[in-house]
Every structure is written in structure tokens, then in C-alpha cells.
Amino acid sequence: MGASSLPVISYPLQPQSLIARFLADPAKLEQALTHVSSISMIFDAGILVIGTNGRVIAESMELSDLAGMDLRFSDYVKIPLQSGKPFISAPFRLSLPPHNPMIAMVVPVRDNDDRIICLLVG
Image 1 (spheres, rainbow, N blue to C red):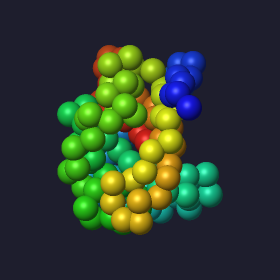
Image 2: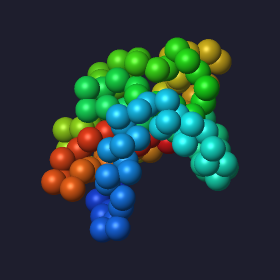
Image 3: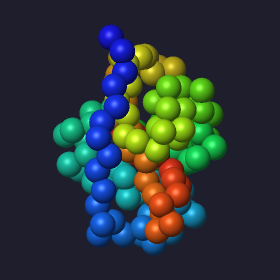
């Protein structure tokens, strides 16, 4: 099964300064991610925030081994950073136990100057 990309969706009211403030404090970002209970109903494996360098900034799964992990060579990181478009990955297995199969849905997050500042992965 191959990967596919989604159409670009723009939200003009997105609070970019709030996102930038959370990026500066990964602990607050993780706290915010773990307190959004509706996320776990849709993304049972949680949410990742990945920096433009491909490293995990924050995660909602409470897996401390994920923090700082370099994922830049994964298609679900490399392709959206290069294309600037949302992306759905092909199925893969998480590199950490319990190695569950997953599909990543990725959306680039942009600043007010339309530059990608991170990826939101669910």
C-alpha cells in the first residue's frame, strides 16, 4: 500500500503565536497534548510534535524514549517537511515496544510568515 497526500487545508484563525510559545517549552507542550482527551479517541497512539530538524519535541503517549528521537529519515517526516503538505503514511511499526502497527497522519504547522515550524503527527 503506497502513501498518499491530502489537499492543503488553511485555517486563517490559527493562533500561531500560541503554537510558537509552546514550541519554546516542550514540557508545557506535552502537558497540553496529554490533557486533550478527545485526541485519544481519534489517535489512539497519541500525538507527536516534531521539529523541522526531524526530532520529537513533545508527545502525548508518555513514552520518555520518544523525546528527542530523530525521525527525519521516516517518510512521514521527510515528505511533509519537503512538500509542505499534509501526508498520510504507509503502515509501519513503532520502533519502541510494543511495536504496534500504525499509520501516521501529518500536518505541517506554519508561522505567520508561512514557514513550517513543526509537524503535528497523529
